Length: 155
Image (cartoon, helix red, strand yellow):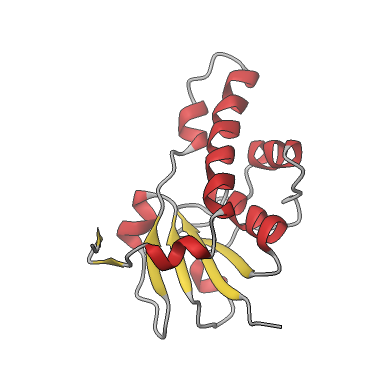
């Protein structure tokens, strides 16, 4: 058995996008990826994220929101920032970790002005589906993506 690639999905609050990515990575690529998620801050697990992931057949209700400092010490292969704020605030990871950026819109911000709960959930569903498509390409797509250095994608 080959060793799984270790990935940390990093977002601002570890409440939505990074939780979705971790859930999809475990569900779709659990044999290839060891997935973790964290935030620059800890905002708690977003109930709407849990609901739309359940619709997609992935239960993230047992995951918990955490900061980078709460993660056990480990040497990640890849750190993937999912929002610009996390990219800007991303700490330096010692060891072999390669930082990459895959930005997704913030469902809670998009849903803030929704006229109905269904409209709000549609924002979550759209971003959820984009994250699923991204995670489905892992880990193969990571070899093709240049690591982030000083906040810019390398070519």
